[in-house]
Length: 225
Ligand code: 6PG
Image (cartoon, rainbow, N blue to C red; front, side, top):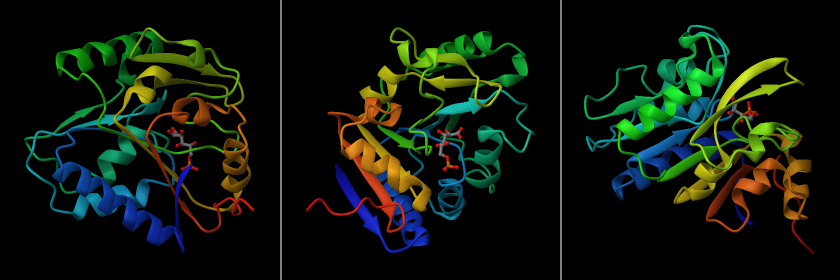
């Protein structure tokens, strides 16, 4: 486990933002962004940072099936943070169009947009992890984990009683680099379980492929003795 431990969540976020900028400066141009609370301050930092005018496609990793103006919307959160000061005309934003009102149609439209943009693979996939081991909207025990032949899929998440749409496991695994951000002690048990070999969804998308785990001290698993 390529683990980078930071003294605080703030240090973690600053380091993660620097890493994304460095990857862009090195040529990364397809960057997938997870939702949730952990990456939000990083997107705020990136929204204030001078980012290369290179043609970047920012891609939402997954979406809660709500309107974009709903406080739960990942795309809405990204627009309010990363794009708070506007988006460069050289950049594109690929999101899940929940306004279609049909999760399966939204997943298909996403894939059409992905192909129309000529995306071959992700350069960077920024991932979070839930304390149940989910990542993106790949929740334990859901059908999404079995989808291998599509870019994106809809999935009913019983525990949340809601539809989600998400990038699929093969797409995340095919990215050149995965960066997992985890902060807070609630994430420590799942990180320990992943290191011990538990096949959580976050383990399934990172096992054996280049992954940087960027965590704060509270989330960091104890050193292996
Ligand atoms: C989402 C995310 C999800 C998130 C984890 C961790 O839509 O919620 O894509 O996979 O990364 O749930 O969320 P936190 O960062 O809020 O702990």
